[in-house]
Amino acid sequence: MKLLLLEDDITTVESIRLCLEIYEPQSSLTTTGKGLEALQLLKDNRFDAVLIDLGLPDIDGSEVIEQLRKFSDIPAIVLSARHSPGVISNALSLGADDYITKPFDYRLLLKRVNNLVNKNNAKENSSDG
Image (tube, rainbow, N blue to C red; front, top):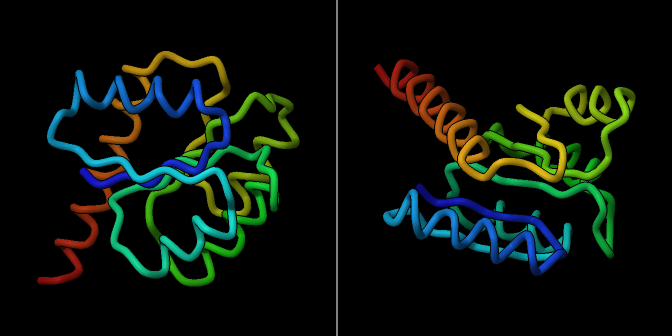
């Protein structure tokens, strides 16, 4: 599984990296803390899923989701400390596939990522035939 993590908090990045090394050692993780760089990476590379923090130094993660949906239907999961229903609803309306509030259980995160990736792969395979 090839993931892009858009997160500017180094502790969260390293925790997710460690979790993947333990539970999904065959996976690869690309990270960036900047939304504009993430959008370029998503245009130039194929990822199985993207994890997006909303609070970023250059542009808000909601803007990343909105821009992403103009060119890709990659599974996108928001990871954010923002937990108000309005913020969550907005992210989902913009095209996020799931929303997980921080702090979160890393095994649950992996389960939800795997579910979305598997669902997306099944959808792609059924449209190929």
